[in-house]
Image (cartoon, rainbow over all chains, first blue to last red; front, side, top):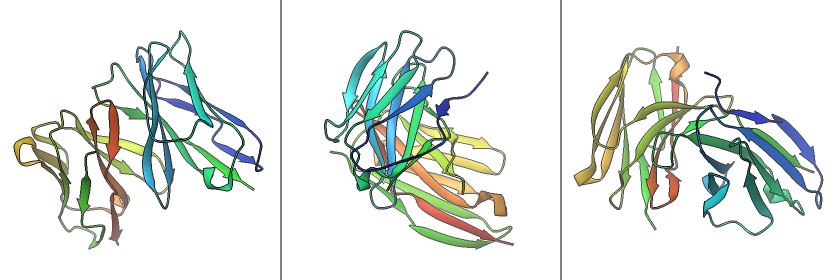
Length: 112
Length: 107
């Protein structure tokens, strides 16, 4: 069974731009969560989607948004990029919310 | 919100040594996982262990939910065990990670 797939693996953007990251969960998994990892803040929860609905959201500004499609694939969008948005963005999937999460390899976003 | 602490923050071992990593949490949880993040940033599931004890090869984990802690044991460590070990738990609808233990295994 294929694992969680995140694209792209690496991305370089400049301040003020916007970016869209993609996550394809493990087949049959309906819950997709997004996390931001930075050296200073560690791993922080962004939001979780389940059956195309955002089920919960972490403490991030409205510039961070996401959506989930009917095939459970999810996208995360960050608008008006700031230098502090440079991070590793990780996506995880699970069959339901309260079950083991499986992570993708992440998208490393660099803001110049 | 819930507080998650991991100890020690850093650990250096010689190959072949054993170690115990600890995760303390401040409230009741119903979902706890241990992950290993390798030097390339990949997060690898080690255990899903809301309670009890599990073993997988040289690794084992124990969670005592009533006392709000979990332990990860690594025996006969290898250089490939190097990386950061995180415990993570579901608290309400959020999934909260501890700060991690950075393990370096020297040849």
